[in-house]
Length: 87
Image 1 (cartoon, rainbow, N blue to C red):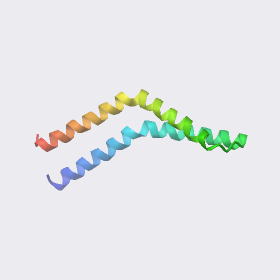
Image 2: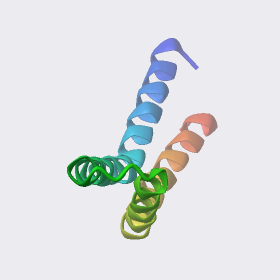
Image 3: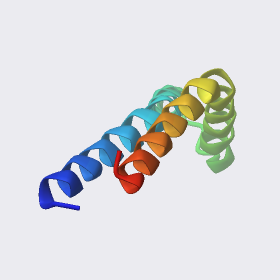
Image 4: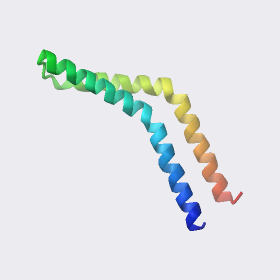
């Protein structure tokens, strides 16, 4: 492989990682901010209150976006195998 092909593969890998990981991370961040605002307004400092809603939100995001995420990873894998085979 030439250097330009390696850079192209690395760019595709980073882009795929960012796109696939974005929905659960963004949803977890939004839920975390909402829980933080709730804790600040009610002055409840329970540590488990911050984690349980985030975990539930991430599981829901995986259920909702899982098919799309799997398709993106499958397409990336097929492209990588085509680079290896030389076509």
